[in-house]
Image 1 (tube, rainbow, N blue to C red):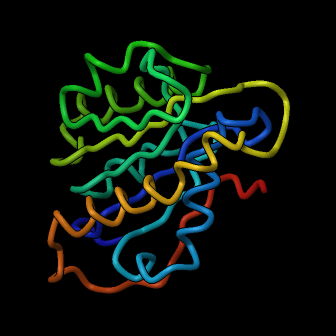
Image 2: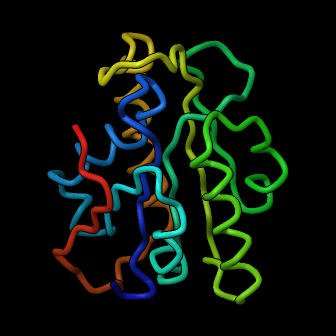
Length: 171
């Protein structure tokens, strides 16, 4: 992975309905043209495994379910320090691990220069491999937000790579 190539990192557990929204989204992105401009990573729930991925980019875009106390399907965008201070309502253990991995990257001086989190308020965290209709209904807007963020970083000088990083390919 080239240091300047952005990473789109989907987090979550697709066995708990809307908790898997980040995984569902990135698995679809792997087959789209954006995979030519960004490294698409299915981060699953094993945060420590992601340290090298996080340290290997200057532009990290994370997609996950987050509890922002909004209505189900609400979309959130957090950037930089907002992720540390605004992302307090964790839904599962993988998010605690992910924050710790971000902290470890910061301690080592290898935190990406740009970090953006796109989150979706889940409707259900019950057992199930399908998203609720509410959360599935916001996937097109969430996908558009991913494309907008990658375009806003304007990294046209980045070399194209055809590799896809996958940690947990469940779906």
